[in-house]
Length: 149
Length: 419
Image 1 (cartoon, each protein chain N blue to C red):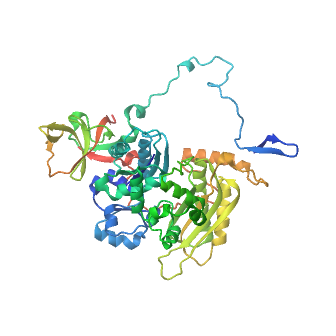
Image 2: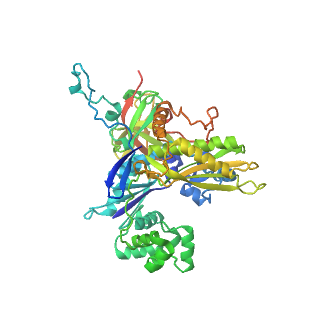
Image 3: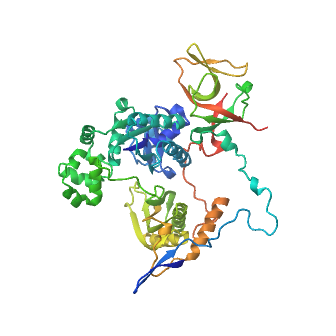
């Protein structure tokens, strides 16, 4: 630790410790080189970040894994990763993660004549009409699906 | 005006977000190492599960009453807390994160804003985006936001979880309703002393002469009294990120009684505290070590000892803190005791750049560089470097038998949705 004199009086000298160690040298971008500067230096940009682009609202974004085949028509296959944004309004036509009767499921929302349907996108599965007997929670809206090829 | 935003039964709410079937069901959350209950949902409270109750004593009770028990899942709670706090800071630039589930907000310059509806908007946004329900108290001072928050919670049907007290009448009414023991910042001892002189409510307290309060409760009590009167006295805490103290304590899975075993544990705890300390760029002035046996064992007398060691100079070095902690442990240790729990706490924290110069300059300046390298390596290689007094071979695992998944911090543990 180095000491730096901060004040001098006729009888006393005041010192203060310098706690930040190391040399203080200005850092010059790209360093100092004897040769030519890199011609790319002037064109440096920030690398593409999927996180920045696929996650529009960090605080409201969650992820889920798809299990099953009922949404294959919409491009959601077994094992795919879903990006879910809870801040978006669940509207007619949106694909949403819902919690219905004790289970998480992903379906397309369809509202006709005041009835909410959870629509599969695979002919082998039937639509679910949500009635008063169901306990339904629309958990979040799916914004992207990421799949391994 | 200030607002106090408080997450309702935060740990239980976090569990429910990812398991909505637990909505309306009793839930309880255990402390580190599954020691005792540290959080209960309203339903579990209603069933009579006491706060702080030892887990093993209530295992049967929970089973019989259908209380779903969880080990504490701090990766999850920490991330959900960060989301809530981040959303709250969209509403005002001045926020003090008071604890994992509470924040004070300064609402300066909101004169023409209807604060009740502003509070509702905050509440709705937090709940929609994160799934965490919050209660909000809004008032002219911090102490009064605590009172308002309690009313918001207690009379949820009427308040909808948001309550504003602003007029003199509403403040008086709220203070008369608040029991002295429930006043923020009034400890059990002061409450007892106040009740002895017929001060039963917060309203009685603000009517006390200032001289009396100063004499009995020092300047801290006086400031609290001013704040409760509606005169803003307590501001948002500066340097909100620096915690007042850091503690690492654990119950052991079995019991320990050999000194070397305990030394290893204590050194690890001290190192853990030191890491946290360096991460927040603080240094400690005091280190405390504590050990105790199993207080529920009827065959042996209860032993619980602690020692506080003032440090010669503020330090954040794992080496120094480890050495001091071991010194403390040796002073407490008795050979014939089976220890069940131990811990290291450090306090008297100061920012590192405010370190005092000690007359005898004992701090090893080498430690700073060494610690920086150690932290860097550990960050990169996952706690690969340890201080010599920590055991390299042994792994001490936390007991977490009821752990939920790390839904938001581990890609392999996210929720599964059927399709």
